Length: 403
Image (cartoon, rainbow, N blue to C red; front, side, top):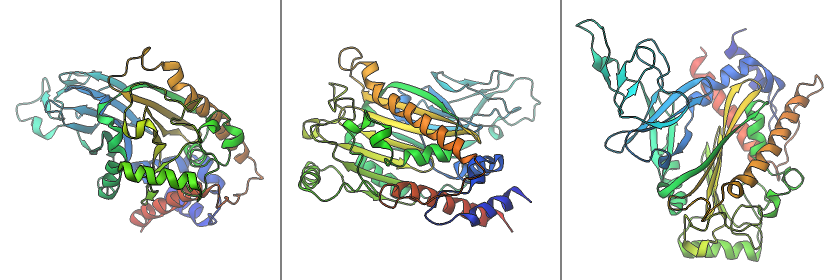
């Protein structure tokens, strides 16, 4: 049986409203299929423009097993490329970030400009064309300070999400932020289990006692916090401030702004700001949280004082790397306006708790007694939405690639 036929059989066995068949979580064929059909065909949030602060800045990341390189060129434009030398394929820049006037392959010193064009290739024949050997580009969109990439030859439509993200994120001024901290955590679980856990708060009241102090963990469906006077007042106040707040969504994305728990203005251990230098000063810094989510891999929260993103990258069938980033205003001074340990404490605790939950979930799914179970339509609507999206995306790929 071909791997695509196997994947088709697994998808056909999926029961609506239930978790996925065992093979889609555990089988090595699922990992290979997911990289091609899901991560290879989706828009991904690579990071923020502020991570490339000047011409010559670059950052290198890995999507599954695929290295990607993102640069800011001499004109200030941001470009993305496959991080693979056009000579014999070596990785040009190791994962991480830096600054360089040119990009030089460490193997044979082929040299590229920041726009990906080949500048120098020693000892090649006279008829060798440098113009034909530039780095291969990756589709890139920069919106409201965010950097989005897609490795597909024909990326999914982006314009609707781009317009909505601009409306919700622009007030938080990500372009004038700085990356205060970043971290990577290894979860020994399939990426879909990591993301299912990240798409619900059914477990939050008991699984995340610290987060529950500020985060309204009883929300249902798409951040539906119910009809009450406090929530209505919050929505009305955001409308008057000109801040988008109503939940909106497309096939692969969601956006919303919601009130935090009573007396809380930030997602922090005590609900108080983690940085005295605000990223958004509207409403005296009491703006709830602006949440965005992108399938297959990311969620983010932006309060008035800081922003946080969680990005999930598969490494193997049962290994996922979780990348966390914390932003503050570019003029915020560490040790004066914010303290690094306090800034990162809550989401670090939450991610470690989620690591345990996802790994325990993975261990249970290994059981021969595992049978896909039903989701709660109230508490796990976003999980159901995620797995439905996954199945839709996978079936569309199969339809285009199976005779």
